[in-house]
Image (tube, rainbow, N blue to C red; front, side, top):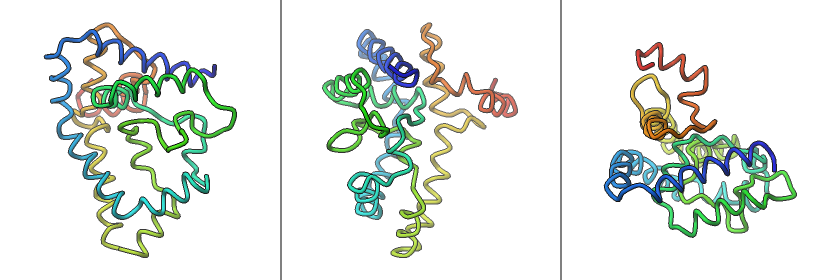
Length: 203
């Protein structure tokens, strides 16, 4: 198993086990922390359904031309795992960890299955990635939609870019306080992100 898949599997299992042992009150508290983020993700979903699904489904999935989904590994924040595990059906989590254990023989993303991405709530980096073809197609069809997308992309930073208190940092902190640590905790492990936190007086 590759280092990437092992890190992903270990971190996924860590989150799942923690949530299985956590009290209902603790799980509800974590879900409450994610309320604004869930609303943002729903806004993104509706926008993509309206403006991008036709373009992206063909380019990324059917024609397999994606520069992102054709990579073996994708960038996942620890908070991506937490959010997904909080809201995904139990079987979806079983399928997610199973695919990490079995892997695949090509260079496509390990999380990509026959029906598309196996995540219930995709990592934010994946959700906000648009190739040039998709951006150009959207601009040509609806310049106003392209401007809206730029606004949404900027808004996504308020959940993960730690120049202020952000959800992704808070979720990592909750698990660290419980004695759990993952290499995917970039807001505590990445020198660049820690430097941003220090500059903002948050570390």
